[in-house]
Image 1 (cartoon, helix red, strand yellow):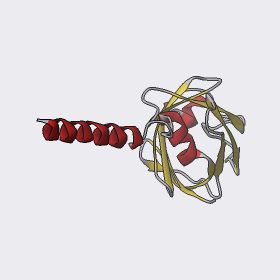
Image 2 (cartoon, rainbow, N blue to C red):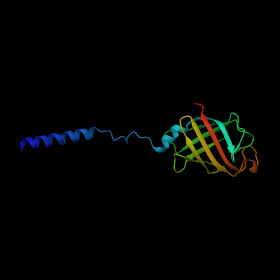
Image 3 (tube, rainbow, N blue to C red):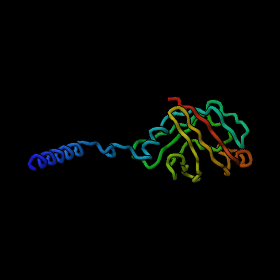
Image 4 (spheres, rainbow, N blue to C red):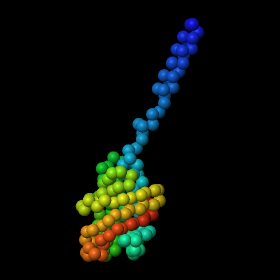
Length: 152
């Protein structure tokens, strides 16, 4: 009987040591927003742009997204915008729900659906406002899809 008690005590002690030493893995896990920020931050160059499935000319158009872990929103700047389009020169983006594929642009509260990988970003949205840089509404209203590749 003493032998059984010693074995049980040894097993209990071994189990406690094992469980105490286990890494739960949650302590260093990044939040969903931080994971998305890490993917989105950088300069993205437009490869394809469509308005209502019709190709649009956006040569050299870039969007640079900035932010850091823990931020509630991201900032962006654009360059090489055409004379008329749905993007202001700069602004902020906050995460919608779910954060893994929804952004909300400040100013006009535009819902932007997105998909991002290490090398590609696709943003799609329905825009109904006036064009930025003096455009007419009829020329920019509709369903936009921007496909970007990461420049840095």
